[in-house]
Image (cartoon, rainbow, N blue to C red; front, side, top):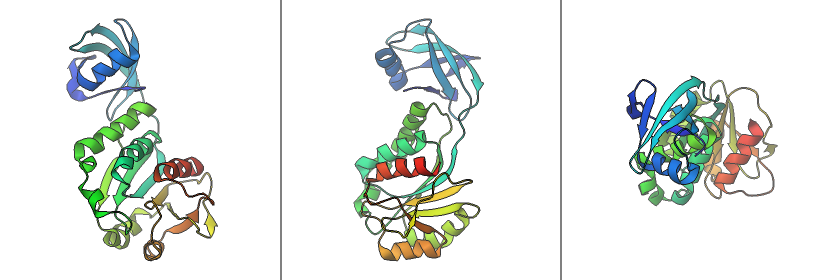
Length: 235
């Protein structure tokens, strides 16, 4: 946790916060902070700053905070991702958030097992937690928007054409004839399939919706590795 994220309800007065639970435990056990120490803080959806510890025990952490710095800018990428395996989903969401993605769509595909959509990891509180962990890692305060789309065809035919307008729409697909570009200027819409990739019919559907299939190289990567590699290459 490189940033202590603050919520509006944490404030007990002007410039004073009181924290309990996970954040308190982290400050005590990992930062091993003491009264008088300063920690990096940020208001969720707002500014960054510093917090000085004024009281700390097993029950609560109290800090005086000054928030006077803007959060880092988002990368101009909308990530459209076939829903990964549940045990991978947490890592992908946290990583994409820490890398600065501003908007994430989780979509269905032929190779996405139906059981994935019933996983408790798709519960709203877990989806929020993973994005908060990504913000804490990267010292950011602005959550990426998250959208779930359980039917690929209606999304591809109805929503995707408008989503990609004004962007460079790229479909990462092993074996595509064109290599993935580097350092693209301007907004990008990036589509990444499930383990094993989109099936040919889905590739055709997405191409007809305006996406261009591109290849990352001869190695087949896991989803979480592909997300990091593609974002690093594009941005």
